Amino acid sequence: MTPVELSRTVLRAVRRAVDEGELSVTVPERAVVGAPGPGGCGDYATTIALQLARPAGQPPRRVAEILRPRLAAAAGIRDVVVTGPGFLNITLAAQADPVMGLVREIRDKGARYGHGDSLAGQVVALRVPYEVRAEVVADVVVRLVGAQGGRATVGHGEPVDLRPVPAPEDPAPLGPDAARWALLHPAAHDRPRISADHLVQRESNPLFRVRYAHARIRSLSRNAARLGFTAEPGPLGATHHGDLTADAAVHHGHGTPGAASPAPLPNGGNALRSLLTPLADHPRVLAAAATHRAPDRVARHLVTVADAVLPFLPCVLPRGEEKPSAAHRARLALAEAAGTVLAGGLSLLGIDAPEHL
Image (cartoon, rainbow, N blue to C red):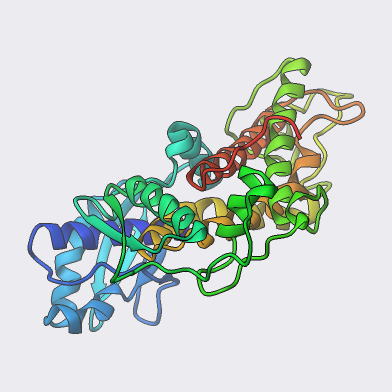
């Protein structure tokens, strides 16, 4: 379980305590988890009980005791201990590689990865002016709220409660996808830029980078099929030359004498770490975008995912004398997971995710 996944688990425990009437608080957007402090124990600790104590009108330790059994019952957690004024110290259960777990979760949920229930049962009534950008933003907010279990309606007239800065000119000549991106990528308080730059297929265009990354990943899957293998979550292989022991090499399927090992992951594994963080953070980003009626958060997040996955892609397929191995299948699974996040995010924005570009 990654820290981001654990943070979500803590928030689910808070939400259950609220739903069951034991806490009367607004569920926060995030729960900070970190290494246990002096006197603590376990793998991680969180101060969520101290954070909620005042709004709950209860002592921090009492809030911690309310949350403790709900946390302890969560999958992937072995034990929870309350220490000090109300610190929750969490010991994780022995588990498989967290990278593998994240990839499997994304593969299992597909385009619905990141959808949740943070707005379950809520009806969000939007009132927007008759203006193209406001209409597009409202359309995406309806999608985001629905993805979090709620329902949104759109009306017009005063009092307006969703009024992004209007577009300076008609974006229609850009075409449907680039026009939506031009209106959605800037924050609501920023004036959108309506120009042909959104159509240019080069690195300076964020929309191009997002769609190019998705198309590259789909191309990798097709090329892997031609080489006779498909994606399968598992160990990713070495982060630099010499990183695998002989036993590990055999376990990864490339210990045969004379067989070439998979190319090491780029940049000493930093590319991998840069990719895992936004993939794991995707559910939180979608929930926050729905809560704050801010589709721009999703657009910027997709750019982050694209920029993180592109340096990783050259090491996915076998090169030179390499033969397809378990590490190649695992790398392809991780790349496809990133592609799933990109396609799902673009779909929520109402933008096409092309197979070819």
